[in-house]
Structure formats: structure tokens, C-alpha cells
Length: 228
Length: 50
Image (spheres, rainbow over the protein chains, first blue to last red):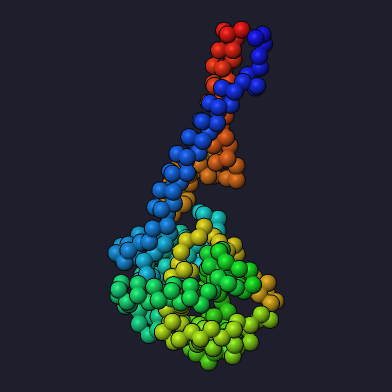
């Protein structure tokens, strides 16, 4: 057999395929463990000791959360309890959430769990996206807690007649069809007061998750029309 | 090319992922280099069998 090409040789392709499949398998297993470290939830002592985690503990609802530009990372990051001036959280400044800023680990976890279950039973993702997952009918809720429209000077909070952001959001969630927000109005889903509080806690916690700057330039769009 | 890590949780992939193509180029290099070695081995085998 003279001058047989390597390209038409079965063994070359079999060995290459074995190498690529083996390498890809190892890489995917490695990435799985790498991701689980990235997304594992922090603890209350992390917050108290100033340890930045990608997903903070449920007690993050006791802190003031803002979304600020980090020059180092080149995008906005959630800042918990004040900015140290270098784009890192200080974990000091507290903020009252439904009247108190000392929700215990157990209380906060229970509230968040109820909110998560409510978000699933009411199927928020049927219209909204959470962390980018879901439907594109209604606005993304990843940073909904930080939406300037819900601040005291925004359009949505005064509409509900409430004086705090969490109460305004909870009131809206219980009677969404009462308030004209958008051409695509949210229907009344029969959300109870307790569920609404849980959902607001769920949203506040979600806004504290470091999503590498997603959604980009959130809250900076001026003169938005119909949520665009 | 390699800049200080800016990610929240330190990770090998965060170090590699410095720009849009760094991770892709690295992984393709790792995959293709051994294939060149396999190619040479198989060529030598075919030549010896000829």
C-alpha cells in the first residue's frame, strides 16, 4: 500500500476523536464543580465579616443594596451595605425591610423560600425573565428591586400610595390589575400579602446576586417608552 | 495578555477568560496540538508499513 494518506486513515481519526471526547468530558466535569463553587450561597457570617460572595445569604435583605459601576470590572455590580470607594461592598449600611433590619437567618430564609415557591406557583417566568431565564413578554426581574421606578421619586411607588419600596412592590403584586404600568398590564394572580412579602424578599435577594453586569446599563435608560 | 483577576470568586477559567477569544484560542490549541502529534505518529506508522 504505497503513499496512503493519514487523512484517510481510520486510526488517526479514532485517536483524535478519543482525545477530544476525553478532554471535553474532563473539561465539562471540571466546569461543573467550578460553577457549583461560583453559585453556592454565602452565609450570614460572610455578610458580617465582609466576605463578598456571588450569591449572598438571605439576610442580605437587612442591608441597603445599590447597583454601581465598578471601574475595575468594567460593569455595574451589586453593592451591599455601602461602597468602599473602590467598587466593593462594605456590608455596613442597613436598610429597613418591612419595618425591621434584623431579620434572623431563619426568618429571612423562610421568607425567601416562600417567595421562591410563590414565584414558581404563580409562574412569573411565563411572562418575565429571572436572571435572564423565562419569557420576553414582561420586564426582566433580575434587578427589579433596584429599578429607579420603584424609588420614592420614581413613577411606580407613589402610584400605590405606599411610602417604602417594599410595601409599594408588595401592594402592586397583590393588586397588579389596579395599577396602570405598561401597555401589557400584569393580571391579578391572587397573590396573598404573605406571598407578596416573600416575593419582594426574593426579588431583593436576587438583585444582590453578582451577575457579571447583567442586565447591562440597568436603570440608566432615560425616557423609556413601554418598557423599552 | 494576562491581567489581574477581577472576578468575584477566583477561578482558573476566569484567568483564561480575559477577552472574547482567549478561552476559545486556548482550548482549541490544547485540542489541536496533540492531534498534530497523533498525525505524525500515524504517518510514521503508515510509512513503515508501506
